[in-house]
Length: 266
Image (cartoon, rainbow, N blue to C red; front, side, top):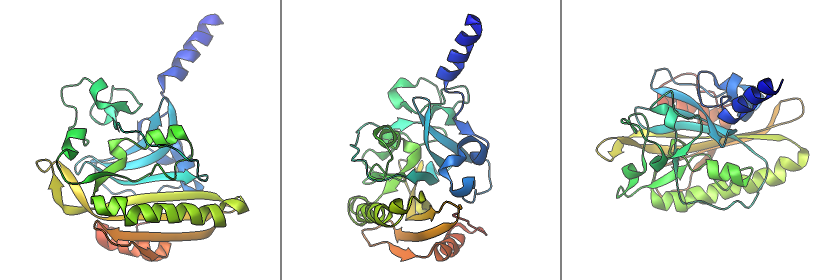
């Protein structure tokens, strides 16, 4: 009996329940409205990540290992928590070696010969003129641990600094306020997906693609799992105000930008 308990404890501590996965819905479906993920682009370069820190899942990311930026991150919003920002960024060891830890880890703590083959590293952003732009943001995180978990390079893409610190931050704040006032008082479950569209520019010797656009959308589900309140936004990766759209109109625009049909958000 004691041996069995010991084995069970080892399994729990190993974090074997979450990692780079083969199916979002079955592994971390809780981050998607009605446990149905957004459209997945075809190709072996795209990886599904249940973003895990200290053996706990906080959100999900669909990642492009060729362009070394995420396509989108999906997460739940539970209200403003007043989380603080950390300065260090994690990487995802399993993207470069399937045998590595399922937890995001600081780059300096990972020792492998081909680190960075399938993901961006901190050095890629140095001197690039771009910020590490969060997709799942600190401001909308559901806890301090979740806020810390947003600091992984698999959840970031090169973002114009003026846009990141200006109109995009204004939008993140506006969305959080709107959801806090319109959805949470009604006990709706709030789901958000935020993504980028690959552009034509690269940073760091053509390693990391610079997005042409950043976009985001939300859906508030009632107790019957029906989306009652929703909206979408998209803006060029410049210091401009993102344009508000219906979710359907945003999906139509993303179909054109990604050259894939359909592109479903919820």
